[in-house]
Image: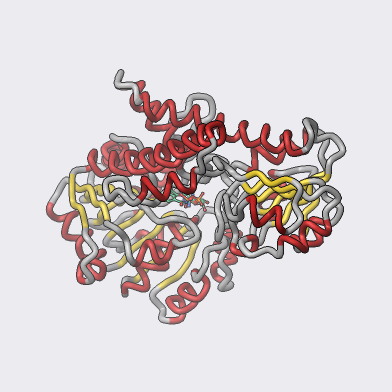
Length: 434
Ligand code: NAD
């Protein structure tokens, strides 16, 4: 198959590289010339474990290339995937479809024969039909189909998720499009990974429902965690105890500082708006959004308590600012709420993050970026673990405590426990929900 991938972000680049590894011929397009220049130099513009090696291997094989020239890339493609951003639209919480629609129109003008235009971006129900209308209007002569193929990969584990998915979801309207999609995903199919082939609207809805459900699960345990703190229960024990129930499952039950990232916040917001537009309010999702916001503010109060009621003049060391480990993505990370509250309250904030500096520099003004957690703890009043990078999972706590002015820790990912922290010399230790 000849595949064109529009957008070389976290989803487009990983999908393009993996499709080429399946044996397809893939051309990746981005309108950002700096990204394409880097890719053509063999450099990966994002941090995603394993991506550089897999990309190099497939470029070498001649199956993978990069360009800013959409027209030449689309010419002759069996399928054109749209994997551009769908951020929250300013002002109203809806998904902003400007990039998707602009890409669809460009693709329409560039197509020279039958092909399937596949939306991989996360888009509200009805978008694929709109894409179809836009293309038909631009090119009444063109023979084409549309397909919805939402992506479920997680940043930080994206290649494995793409290569070994729980399922692939494909929404189509015609057998011809279904055949093209089958051919593209055949390598997975042959290895027994299930492909759910359905209609366009159901495919679009599956993506929002999946993300909203996961966001709900996290938020549920975060709210239970707040209650655990009051009643003397340990949320880690509670998660373990409920997660063993096969109907509940043990994933996404880790209490923490609230969900963030490039998907859950914007997708829950978009789903809530879709519900309101159809007079079917998604009350659970609306509550999740509200509670998640409260969680982040509750964390700020936890930190303030550990600073004796005021951040003013305190030295606070923050370990981890990306929205989760193994990515450089800072979009909607809890750190973007918590760190500015520290800085705004007069704290001197030091930040250590293995990959967050480049993205975080502009987003977190007024902080001091450091490399080494131990040096960053020197004379600090509080250490905050905000993202559970492996680098912070096995700290020598006694060494950290010894360097600090007042050895206090807020472990917002529950990596350590009070007993060990106290034993290591911390005078105060707070986790979440324990
Ligand atoms: P991103 O912002 O990292 O990348 C989007 C890329 O598209 C950018 O490089 C941009 O320059 C490019 N682009 C925009 N318009 C273009 C055009 N007309 N022509 C060529 N290139 C264009 O976004 P992302 O994180 O990869 O997300 C893409 C979509 O996938 C979103 O809808 C998102 O919700 C969804 N998604 C993301 C994830 C994730 O973990 N990031 C997971 C599943 C689904």
